[in-house]
Length: 286
Image 1 (cartoon, rainbow, N blue to C red):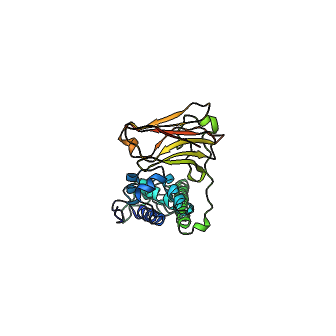
Image 2 (tube, rainbow, N blue to C red):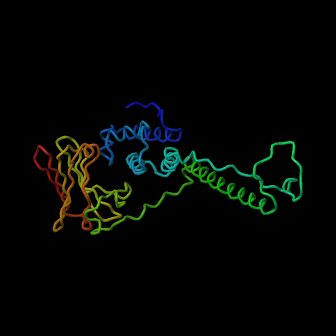
Image 3 (spheres, one colour):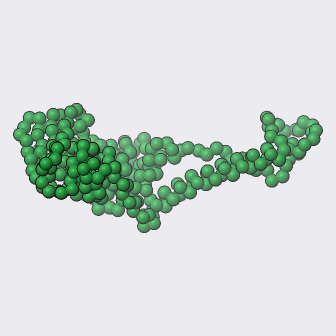
């Protein structure tokens, strides 16, 4: 992987990619090891770190967790990068009309002859027209001021991380039994700050097989770092219905294979099994 600055991204996206590269270097992890420690593949991290693709916010938080870095500063930087990447940062405000302090000669009622300058088409005459222009000017000015204030706040949050309070994790979409059958990311349960690996085994390929528990959702799931097409991963608990995930296509092999969740309230007796397409099943319990 090269450390060149991204050519297609803007300056904020380039800065974010550089910060992420610095964090990855600080961890001492290879790209393969980083993929194994997070929910993103090696190829995905290569795109994020080279600035070819904007990293998801969850990926930024995951890398911060691995590097033991507070998330506030980089999340604020990500907010700016997201605006830049999406093009919303380049939205310009409409031109601000200057309200007239006093009526001009053209605004006063009466019969005036042609002026020597270029007349503006369709002038609005009278005090009502002036009020409308004044209101429009105020609205535009307030809108522009709000955009400027938000942008300035985000820049301040990036450059002064001590001024930003850590955001509370969002409320999850399920809890315990209601999480069964749902994906952890879709329900907001796969938050790095709320996850706990209850057990881990290394497969013959060297990739980790894990049982992950969400303290916030009280649910658990199994995860394997890399998989091949046809591999099957299962998670179960005594007396409960198992959940499984299968690598069905190339896309499934580019990211960690993750099962839907099961009720993890007891946090004991959880069982994960990995069955490769051309090998023997391997299981372990918590």
